Structures are given as structure tokens and as C-alpha cells.
Amino acid sequence: MRFDLTDLRLFVNIVDAGTITGGAAQTHMTLASASQRVLGMESDLGTPLLLRSRQGVQPTEAGHTLVHHARLVLQQMERLRGELGEYGGGLQGHVRLLCNTSAMTEHLPEALGAFLAQHPRVSVDLEEQGSTDIVDAVRAGLCDIGIVSDAVDVEGLQSFVFRRDDLVFIVPRGHALARRRRVALAEVVDCRFVGLAEGSPLQEHVALHARRLGKRLNYRVRVRSFEAVCRMVEQGIGVGIVPQAAADRSPSLMHLRRIPIAEAWAARYLLACVREVEALPLNARRMLGQLLSKAPVSTRP
Image (cartoon, rainbow, N blue to C red; front, side):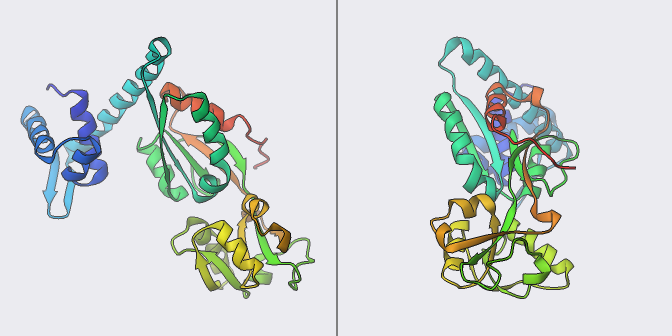
């Protein structure tokens, strides 16, 4: 069995993409070359690694075993590159980071910008996903670091508080609720809401708690960003629920009233989670340290 690092990287990319074409593109390789490499790997092993269909490819049991070990090898090589780069100064590092909507829009730009400024030779793959999907990706070794809501199960991972991320009600000044100091969801669940677009993990989180009250949220409009929610609420279109950081940064702040939610589910933390800190490549460990450098002291139970 004589697989090189290109073989391993190609195979991981094919499995992640679900097609040989997609994996070849991610590896900067022609489809013909990629197909020939996979056939050579299967010939060396004497067993198929992929199940091929019109919809794409899926790994066989042998393929699952290979991709698991390939990820470990590639992670170790990335760690080696980072640590040797300390001596040569010419090698680049690469970190894969997944985060949820709130982290992406409200908390990451400053922390990530500081890290990239200090490490000009490091590149970052940054992607926004739902917290549940991110935890699954971290467990599977598909990313180095994930930033998720503390509402998801992070069992089996090492997790650290990244930022406080409380949710608040927002209403226009002059609204009937504007003078309230705290509000429960049950008191406003029948209001007309401005919400995030369908499929938003945060909006699904709020909708879940409405369903537990036997209600469905009534959306007048659904938009794609927290800023757009704030602007719509400012115009009197409806009420909204957004992270407090988003409300605080909104250009509409002077025309909005932020009201704390009197329920435990709205008091949230964002967590940075990894499989194992010591197993991270050097640059991923550095990034984690940067992300946690201004982390609040957790009061989570």
C-alpha cells in the first residue's frame, strides 16, 4: 500500500464533496487524474473504496476506514507544517473554522481579524452552519474549531466559553411593551414578528420554544440578517428577537427598545469546541487561544 499525501487529501475531498468531480476540483486536479488515482488506490488495496451512482459516490466500509485515518494523517501534517514554519518562516498554515450565525456576524470579525493580522502566513476556511451540524463536523474531524450555541450537546468534545450571547426582544420606541423591564415569550408569542429567513438555526430555536407553548410565531416578514430585522422593527413592521450584540450594534439602536427575555433559554453562551486541544495543529491552537483571550467568565450551571 503506497498512498501519498495527495492521494489522502484527494480521497477526503471526494468523500466531503460527494462526487469525484467535486473532490478533484477541491484538490486542483483534473477529473481524469483523480479517477485514475482512486482506481490505483483500490487496486493497491484489492477492494473498492467508493460506491458509485448517478447521484455521486459514498465510501464503502474500507473507504470509511481510509477517510478516518487520512484525516488524522493530514491533521498531523498540518501540525508539523505549522511547527516547522516557526523555523523556516516560509510555510503557510491553514485552519478550518465553522461558526453559527451569531458568531459570524457579531463576534468573530474582530477576534479573527486580530489573529490574521498577527499571522499573515495563515489562511482560514470560514463557513457558517447551524450549531448541531457544526458539532457533528468537529466530531468527524471535518474542521479544527467550531463555535456553537450552548443549547447543543457537546458531549465528547472539549468546549470553552467564547462569548456571552443573550437574546433580547426588540420593539420600536413607543410600542406598548417598550416600558417593560422583562418580558416572557408567552406574553408576546401572538405578536406579529420580523424573523430571520427560513432555515435559520436561531429562528428555529425561538420557534421551538413557541411550539412548547402550543403556539406558532406569526411572521409578517422574514429577512436575512440581524441588521435587517432591526431596521424592520424600527419601522413598526413587528417585534423581533435577536442577540443583544446585534441590537447594540444596529444603526437603528436609537429607535429601538431592547427588553431582556425572562426565560433561561434566552441567556446563552457561545462555545468554542474542539476534539482535543493538544491534537490541534499549531496554528489552530493559536487561533483558539486568540478566540478565548477575551472570553467572559462563565456563569453557566
